[in-house]
Amino acid sequence: MPQATVLLQKLKAEHVKLYVTTNGVASTQYRRLEDADLMRYFDAIFISEELGWQKPDRHYFETVFQQLGNVPYTKALIIGDSLTSDVQGGQNIGVATAWYNPLHQKNEHKNLRPTYEIDELIKLLTI
Image (cartoon, helix red, strand yellow):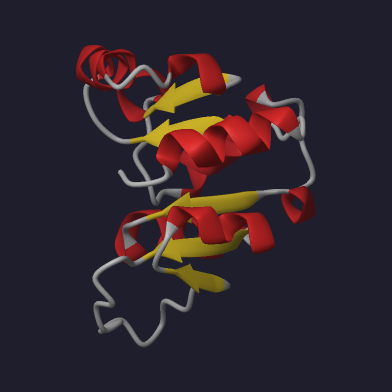
């Protein structure tokens, strides 16, 4: 993804805690992160296969936050490209969300309203 490495470097330099939350097969997800040379930026990886729940189920995100030591939901931001997985998951537990929408797709889900919408990853630095 354009700007991903630059963004991750800047956020790490500012001591922002970064986590991956993803659905899928653990071995595949770890390989993708390793192949993209991104593992070093993340403090933890949370994969549905390992947690026993899938996004957007509230149990998935509750489990993540429990493993983080009960970080306050008000101190978190869920960033994702899926309205029905990432934004819905954030709404399910009351966490702010940023919808990464580089193609400017229309939101066809009236009940899913991201807190923020960005078309470039680097714009996360302004949130």
